[in-house]
Amino acid sequence: MERLRAALPAAPPGIVLIGRRHLRSNNSWMHNVRPLVGGSNRCTLQINPADVAQLGLGDHATIRSATGELTVPLEPTDAIMPGVVSLPHGWGHHGTPQRVAAGHPGVNANTLTDDTPLDAPSGTAVLNGVPVTLSTPREHAP
Image 1 (cartoon, rainbow, N blue to C red):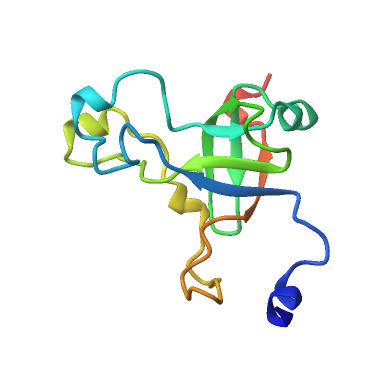
Image 2 (cartoon, rainbow, N blue to C red):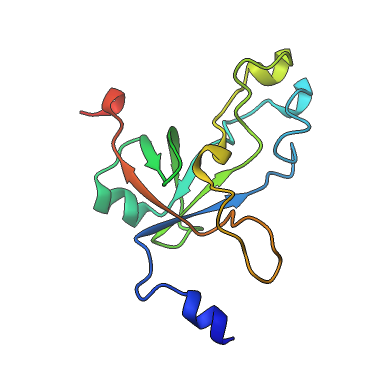
């Protein structure tokens, strides 16, 4: 417990990124099955509407972490608490030989994660609670 307390930041980060899964496609291995990729875009950044208003965002945002940046469509929802955003992993099918998946590429959330910080109890990379910033992307600015 002492190591955990010592590892916690003095102040919570501004916005943190968490992942999510979609039951219909299991995020990636079914993205090349035509009947399972239909419907609305599921590769969106879920964000609390209060954060959208506070940050002055529109329908897209540029999300940046210490390791990369992506431009993503926003999905405002009260299901996400303020200060947290959620992006599904398992997308980013640009240039893949899988024709169906390439037609619905989405973005690769791994661009935003860093395999250097490790979760001490499990010894695995930290993939949730990644500090990020959000801004209006240039191509979507008013």
